[in-house]
Image 1 (cartoon, helix red, strand yellow):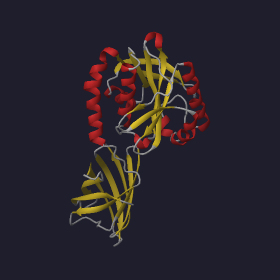
Image 2 (tube, helix red, strand yellow; image 1 turned 135 degrees about the vertical axis):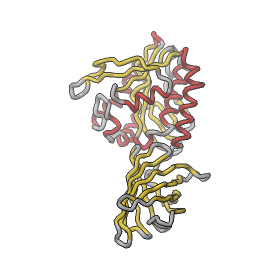
Image 3 (cartoon, rainbow, N blue to C red; image 1 turned 180 degrees about the horizontal axis):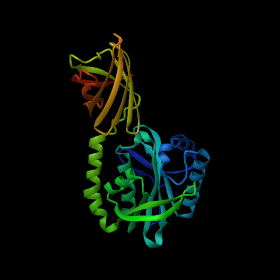
Image 4 (spheres, rainbow, N blue to C red; image 1 turned 90 degrees about the vertical axis):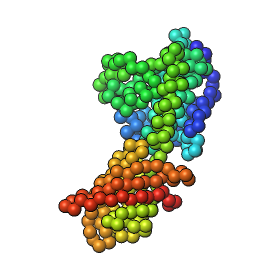
Length: 316
C-alpha cells in the first residue's frame, strides 16, 4: 500500500479535506462544544482540555504513520465544519480505517458526509491501493450504522467490549468494511445513488437564521403578508417565532426530514384569540435558490378547520 504524502488535500464540490495542524485547534475547539456530537464517543469531547489533547495526539500519530487527520472545510460557507481521519494504517496488510468523523450539527443530514466519504474512499482505493477499508461505530449509534450501510459498507458484526469508556463501561462496536474487489460497484452504483438521493432530498437546506413571508393563504388563515417568520435549526429540530400583521406572537416547532417539515404551532392574534394547529410543509427551492414552503394545515380544537398556505425565504 502506498504511503500518504504530507500536505495531501482532497477536494470535492462542497468540501475540501485539509491536513490538520495546530492552526486549526481554536476553530475546531469552538465547533466541537456541542455535547450531541459526542453522544456515542468513548471520550467526552465536549470538554475543551480533552479535545485539544485528542487533536494534539492525532498529530503525534500522523508523525508515526498510523493516522492522517483532516479538517473539513466547507467551500461555500468558507469555514471549518468538522474533522475526519484515516487511522489504524497498516501498510504491511494493505488496510486502514476511516474514523473520528464528526460534523457540526448544522451540517448533519446534508450531502457533506457522503462527499467526505467518497473523497476518502476514492483516495484509499485508487491512490493508496488499499485492499480493505474499515469503518466502525457504537453498536447503539443507529444513525451512523445506517449511514455506513448506505455508502456501501458491508456489516461484519459486533465486537464486544471493543473500547473502554471514560466512565468505566465498555462500548460494543459495529464493524463494517469495503474491499478493493467491491470498490467499483460501490463507486459506480451505490455512492452515486446515495449522493443523488441526499442531494435531491436535502439540497443542503438549512433553516438557521432564515426569514419567511407569506405569499398565499386560505381565507380562514390567520396570518397575512405583514407577518414575519424567523426560523432556527439545530440538526433536524426547526423552531420559529412569528409576529406582525394580525399576529401578536407565535411559536413553531417542527421535525425536518429533508423535504418536509412536520409542524406544531400556536399563536395569539391581535384580537386576543389563542390558536393552535399542526401542519405538514413541503420544502423546496425556487430558481433563485430560496427556500419555499407549502403548508397543509389544520387548526386544533373543537372547530377543526383546514387550509393551505405558501411562504418564501426573504432577506433579513
